[in-house]
Amino acid sequence: ARWRDLLKTIAADPSLATMDAAVHRDVLGGWLNRTPGMEAIWSNRSDGSFVHSEPEAGLLNARGREWWKRAMAGETFVSEVYLSAITKRPCLTVSLPLRGGDGTVVGVIGIDIVVS
Image (cartoon, rainbow, N blue to C red; front, top):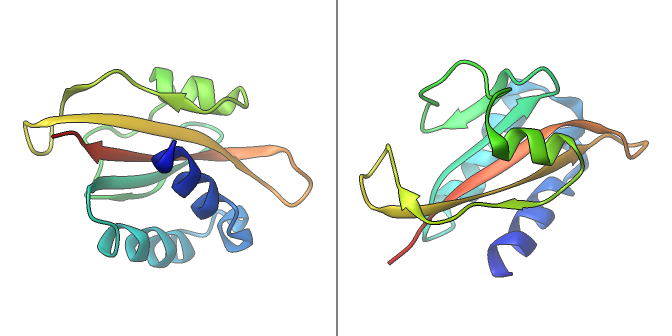
């Protein structure tokens, strides 16, 4: 619940609705740097392409990923624990819709969390 709530707080930042890569880099990078236990943070457009990913995503488009599909459908997604491709340690993914000012889903925001 803590991580879902944190991600909702991040996604509520109205500047993210612009889908501007520089804004996403600044906002998301800031959250990653000051949040212990967060391993990665990213955002995607409604076509699945990445706006920003830190560290850099290992794929070009997330359209086929369950976390992207569920978030684009308006859901909050929480994965099962799996081995991180980044650290090779257990982690989980949380993603949710990124909404524009009118409430429509304009993309996805997600985080990977270290599980110890």
